[in-house]
Image (cartoon, rainbow, N blue to C red):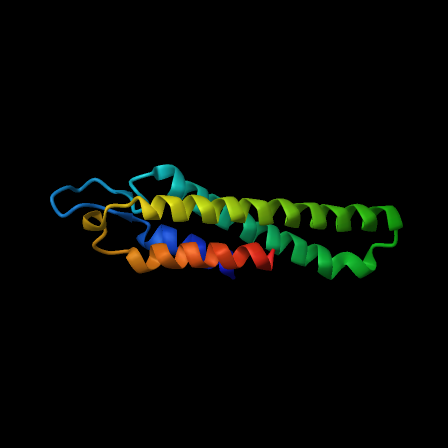
Length: 126
């Protein structure tokens, strides 16, 4: 759920423009990489959650202990990696938000703060 919130906040209001320009830019200090990173890890985290949910549903039917072990290790390893990536995302988005000029943010400040907040919550949920 947190990954969907981060993704939705960045896609919905993560890109904005100045009143005198039609060109869209990322709300996080005009850094396109910040928006791309948040969107990317949000999408991949959501897809991974769906995959591991399906694995968990199918898990009792797997009779081979070796296959079960590899699935559990894959889940554990992916969760550890994704915890680290969410931490990097939180630090990156927070840093870029701190350097964003206040006069460039007319709409979308709440979405940017929500993306930062839920990327922080994602660290602990993963």
